[in-house]
Length: 281
Image 1: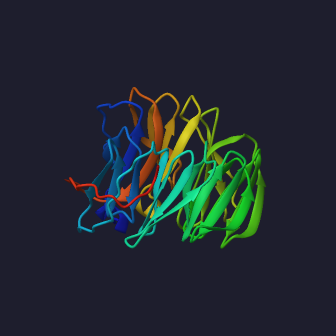
Image 2 (image 1 turned 90 degrees about the horizontal axis):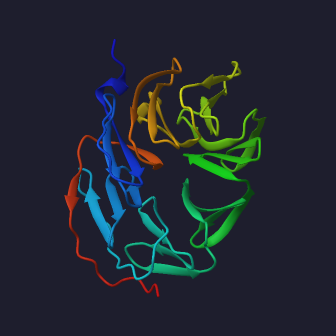
């Protein structure tokens, strides 16, 4: 009998250093060599000589901005578009663009529920309306719905609704983190290429072994049927989450920077003129 997830096919957005020709049998592939951001699986914004906006049916329009400074990261938090340079954080809604000057060198953006996360090298700050509401110490962070994972060295802390629920001492230093949306399993990529699978139902943890180099990114498919993994040599693996067996793989031949997933079967490119809404200087 087919499961509900058999009726859908996820799209894997692969952020590559250079363009490559590859495909996976189990998943639609959408590749980019530029910074990009999803908005609730409906809108894709790509940074390339300005902002290029794509729509994923049904059509939904976002505000348009002109960028006057080199942008280091972009993100959607709900319907709010956020972009970051080394010196300015901009939070853009349909009504206004709020500028917050500061030292943001080496900072990455992270969506944590309704909060905007600023991931510094050794801490995570969560902002609401431009104000810092929470601060966590840690080297890595990952968020899915109301679950937040923060690792500091070998220690992994698990938060639910910003309350610490569990701490796990990992046998290997993590390089990437992920958790399924049912909060059943936590996955930790490592520098050896192994992926640690921590079962939250009390059953023994396991190790997913295939990659031979550092895991740089992890992501789940729709309904958590598959786990996608990417290593530092450009290999992508597709794992069956129930069996822990790799079912698909591909060598891209280039460096992979990040994996993201969305439920869609097609995208349509839209060229939108840029208007002057931002005061970045």
